[in-house]
Length: 290
Image 1 (cartoon, helix red, strand yellow):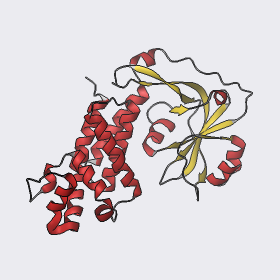
Image 2 (tube, helix red, strand yellow; image 1 turned 180 degrees about the vertical axis):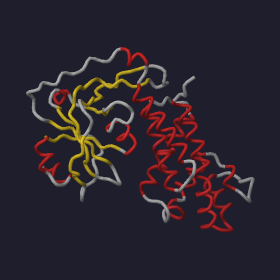
Image 3 (cartoon, rainbow, N blue to C red; image 1 turned 180 degrees about the horizontal axis):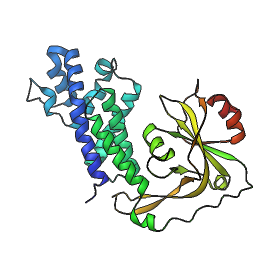
Image 4 (cartoon, one colour; image 1 turned 120 degrees about the vertical axis):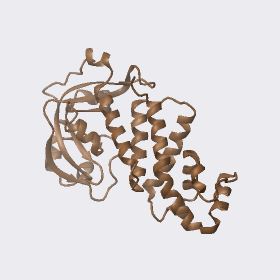
């Protein structure tokens, strides 16, 4: 029986507690020293039974609450704003999971990725298992459900005489290697929200690799654009995700540039340019200003 997204997120929450607790406990106790139990009781508003190892009895929700409310005093010196954002996000994930809210494949991957990043930030050994879970889920998302493999959605035709529009997508390392570079068996990129007027004009796709690369590094010609079909919230069926599409490459992606980011913020979503501009631009800032 395949693992559901609810089960995946639940396992990630357990691993988050196991991997985060030693770091959180060490930093908290070192900072508050003899007052650590009293301060912990004030934050949680309940008595602590095990006064020698007070963090042992905290569940994931309580652990994240302590880190969040003690951030400025305790954890800001060893973690950054990115990790603070992850703590906030994972508190919401845990609450959704506890209330049995459904997780789509993308929601589950986001939860696993955020857990992985936070555990890596504190050098936790549990990060390795979360990394394996991410790869397994990414494989399932790339394969899609059985009905999708038997009957592909009707492709959107791309006229050969249309403009050389390029959609540039931000890509993290694992999905970039697995999808964009085709290590998973298919050269593609999916779950891109594209407006109707752009559909017939896109001829190429380029990848902006997120930090630490922080540059546009690869480009590929687009052969087909098809509606993106993902798994239903319970992980058992299929659904077409509205205006989101999957771009299938006609050949493997090739290296270009690189076109680095220098000053501006990294792109958070797809943006458009042309192949002519892509070939003649030196930096991401110049490309987006032209």
